[in-house]
Amino acid sequence: MSKFSEKREEQATAASSGPRWLWVGIALVIAVVGWGAYYFLYFQKPVSTLDGFAKCLNAKGATLYGICKQAGVKNFPTWQFADGSRMEGPQPLAVLGDKAGCRLP
Figure 1 (cartoon, rainbow, N blue to C red):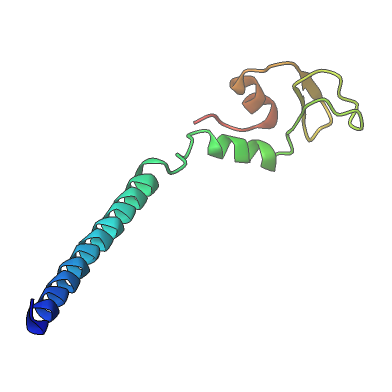
Figure 2: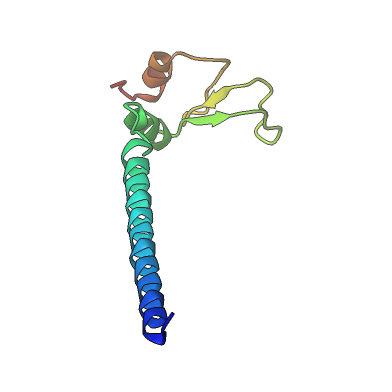
């Protein structure tokens, strides 16, 4: 083989490997962008319809305790309200709303 043929073959090899890596890079970028779009569109935390109700309970001074010896709580769950009254055990949301003065959505 002549030097000219060898040089031409080296250039052809270098040229063919260059664009191949470019296409791999472009495909990788497209895959990452596609995955990111999918993740942010479908895995965002949904807003609950009860968020406003929970914020109202908090604003009205209703506190939910687990087992808390400092607060004198012996049963779970225990709700304490701004007027100092307590409700022990699971309570329906309507009862909590009436006691705190919050409206369910």
